[in-house]
Each structure stands twice: as structure tokens, then as C-alpha cells.
Amino acid sequence: MKNFIITIVFVGWIMSFIPSVGMAQRYVTRSRTVQLYQVLDVSLSSTSSVFDFSALANYENGITKPGMITATVKANVPWKLTLTLASNTLSPQITPTPMPASVIGIKASTAATYTPVQNNAPFFVQNNRGLYTVVFDLRALPGYQYETQEYLGDFYFTVSQQ
Image (cartoon, rainbow, N blue to C red):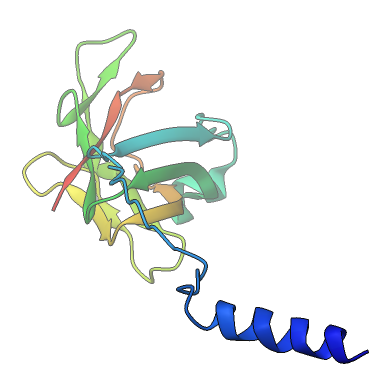
């Protein structure tokens, strides 16, 4: 027993001279880059594109089409969505007399008033970066001034950075 205690004391005394080895730590870092590019994207969906003036009351009150066009904008910059036309007139299909495009009004569904569609004062909506769905209501109110026929017009939606 005495030898056992002497051995333990001796081992303890020897261990006090041996430098203690701790857990070494080493940190290595590597940088990573996330490269982003400008995103400006718009897609459109729509309900029927026809304003059918078959009822007399429609000539007096106009035809309103809530949610006629839905634009989905994806952008990582502040954006502006602008409506322009191929021409400020709607092209007649039979006679040469055009109808002004301003007989059609447009508004975001959350807005109160319609803006006449025309190139010299284009309609637009704008917002910050993100994913947005913008619903547009259209109204046609030609009155009694135009000949019986179909009138066509092309609407162009352009998304750009503010």
C-alpha cells in the first residue's frame, strides 16, 4: 500500500513538470459572394378584352370591367409600371374614322378615379422593390359619337426603374 501511495505521488510530481496539452483551436475562414443582378419583370393576365355595347344603357353609363387586367411585378429596385398605346386612337375595322383611345379609362382597383388612356399623359403605378400584384379596372364610355363597328387598340405595359 505504501508503494502504491509513493507511486501516485511520484507520478503526480512528474506530471507537474510536463507541460499540459490543451485542446488547440484553429479557425479558418473563407469568403463567399452572393452576386445579385437587377430584376424588373412584369407579366399580365386579363379577363375578356371586349367591351360589348349591345345594351342602350351602356352607351349612357359606360361599361366598367373590374379586374380586367392583372399585372404581376417582380423587382429588386423601386419600379414604375407605365401604360402606353400604339396610337392615341383605336383603329376602326370598317370605316376610316378612328375613335380616341381616351374613351377608355383605367385605374388601379384601389384608386377612386379613372384616368383616360392616352400617350401624352401616360398612366402609371409605382412601388418599392418586392413582388406585387396590381389589379386594374377599365371603363369604356364612347357615348353616341362613333360609327357602328369594332375599334381595336394595343396597350403596352412597361416596367422600369424609378
